[in-house]
Image 1 (cartoon, helix red, strand yellow):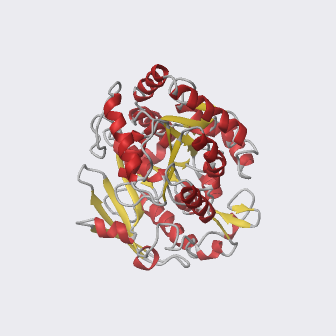
Image 2 (cartoon, rainbow, N blue to C red; image 1 turned 180 degrees about the horizontal axis):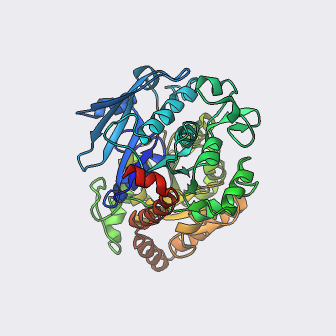
Image 3 (cartoon, one colour; image 1 turned 135 degrees about the horizontal axis):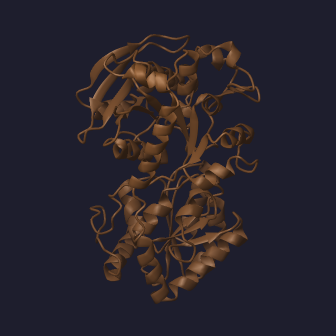
Length: 482
């Protein structure tokens, strides 16, 4: 029997992107399609509805407490991925991004907006939303869909569920009154349920009610069971880990990250074709208004938040520039970091370029043109930029944590440093300068980095095996659904 999998997410690269979850939501279901009937469900944000054509309304979800009634639409991408969209204009068709308004403030009704997603996903999984389909397994992702396993449990459904933690720091915390607003049972507000220091935690609900937990690297799976990385949830996670119900599976990247075929590059190139690669470097310098230089070009492509170690880059900037290096930065984030980076650019416009936005094409050109990619993250569950960078010959400098520790080979495809401190980070920067001074070593490392594949086939195989194990734990359900 082909396993029917419902993949619940709040973003997907095809239609709406805020972070790395969107890339995973686009790639993993596609990688699993040859083996499973995987269908994606997400909210019908304004941008989503504007892009989708031929949406068929397949069902309705009734109101629940303060969750308004909504419609469920279904469509299929040009390459065959089935997508359900939750149609509720009052909840989702707004300016801003999926989580925040145009000024970067969280929507005040995010509890209702994402509880509506989770409740509708649970109904869909049980066969109560699309009469022609039900799920054998549900795969929820991060706090916006983490209530899906809880709603299934509250409805008495036995559908097996997996929750993937992409970033434990974002937990979906709301006041106690949220329990009433989302139609959850009062009995769920306990330490063994959704209660977290007097608040309702959507993420904790998923940690408690999901059949199995995954996160996006084996290292991060170990880290989050400790107080240093557990964000107050390490006790729950240690319990699930001890029961062998927590698995780390590193993400992949799609095959468009190929420097020889990428259409976004001014000059495609392969390993060894360093002259063509230098043309990309010259393009990036012109784009950012930097002087043409024979020194190394460092890149930072990231959300501009404390987690990513932006303060460490700012502290090192003068030393990098004084040593003959240049820096280009692209991203959006916390206002204090955006302001500090603009100030750094104004002080040294010939050496520090800053773009406060994100664009996929620009990101690809930056990775193809930079010599090194800065990733001094305090924690990094998986990270994708270090993989993108290596594929395009930019050697990453990463803190030895999470997925960075698993995907950067120190001294071979990049550089790892031990602590998220200025001293430890500068040690890696100095190693990068030393490598840049030896073209033979630099080009050898570039070639080794570009030889890495990070293909989705490997994590997809791990998820396929996990789906089978988790689904097999519910044999009566699967025979009933056949």
